[in-house]
Length: 438
Ligand code: XLS
Ligand code: NI
Ligand code: NI
Image 1 (cartoon, protein in one colour):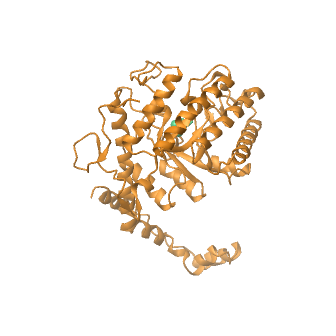
Image 2 (cartoon, helix red, strand yellow):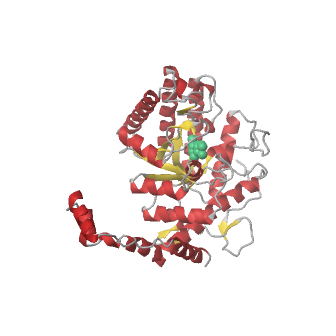
Image 3 (cartoon, helix red, strand yellow):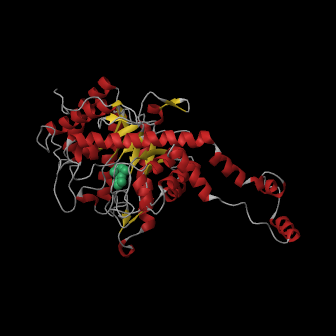
């Protein structure tokens, strides 16, 4: 097999002053931060679909990038060329995981039996690469949104036959995930939602989605899958209303249907901002509920109301993300670059520049988040802000040793409380700035 990215060397760490575009400026795999190597803090993954599939098509124009990798698209030869390209790409960047949808791997046939045969064929090819390189799967998933049969969703479809096809695809995708050593399995509810309640039985659809997930868990465990299942929340797009709106909604759903022991969340930055939250908010909601599993690392454009899936470059955002991840004790999953190069970044070099940007943004975020934690002023401020609960009436409240009537009597005696301690947001923001830019 010949080299595909011939002009691209192995990407090494060059340091912040390096002007070589093919060197990392901050990602130094071996560097130890808070007692752990950067590469352990940051299990990065390549997204098969964006990196090896997406070629710049948008609603108004066709492909700009050539992702044929020397083979004719739509053939099994092309499927193998993508595997070759993907593994060479990951090895050159030092990336140890990949994520995939079933239909990213092979051209989908009309008959699912033929698609599955092709998936088996490619899976042997991928398994051999895994054995040779040690690169593994972070998570797998089934694409239950592109094929016309999923126009009304998969688990939420009004057609029981379509529900069965969804089950068949999930079963196969779980088999492949296990074969590729996957750490997780994702449900992104692509079209699990609705356009109008005039034709929708919301309660029934949600129950059916839960039934499908329960069967997936049972099957996964029966074939030895020990990893986490994830819901990846997203509020809208393609559907107007999607059931897994955000972290809080998804957690409520998982608890309601008793799926919370097997599931965690895969939080995508761009989805959180589409839901009207910050990325950090949805990470925190997941973490406080013990459900922060994995991250889809990308960035949206706040001026645009859709999933632009840009490579993350905003260091403030990656810093706050890594602050949450460090506080949560790390991820059981990893950081999947569910990101695509812009339409006009169409060369093979751009594929590498994109990942270098993304990996460096998270490496810098990690360094800055560690610095915020080591500095200690923010954590101390938050702790002190609640000091009124450390003793006296506050302590009694926290320990459940009092009643509403007792508290009312206490308030009567006080007459008028002092104002709460100040929030000092601007002071804290200036601390963050001084750490970011030192
Ligand atoms: C789409 C989602 C999708 C999932 C995997 O918005 O982010 O790419 O990550 O199906
Ligand atoms: Ni995603
Ligand atoms: Ni997305």
